[in-house]
Image 1 (cartoon, rainbow, N blue to C red):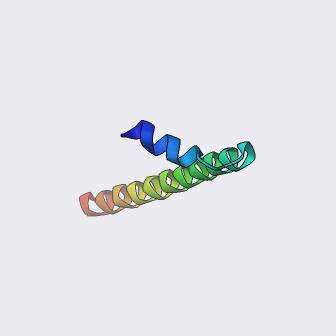
Image 2 (cartoon, rainbow, N blue to C red):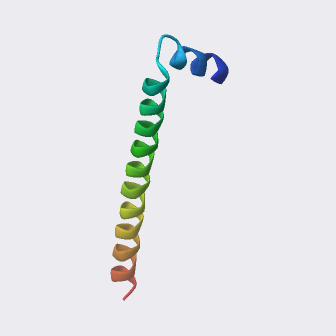
Length: 52
């Protein structure tokens, strides 16, 4: 299934378009990770406040 998705992603795209799409997916992943880390940090702070 994944191979099919990758081949569809590459179909009719230039090398530069593929590289740009790959970089964009990495950027989105980093943003998601940063948001997740921030949410975890907030939850930990809230738990510390309750335990004090």
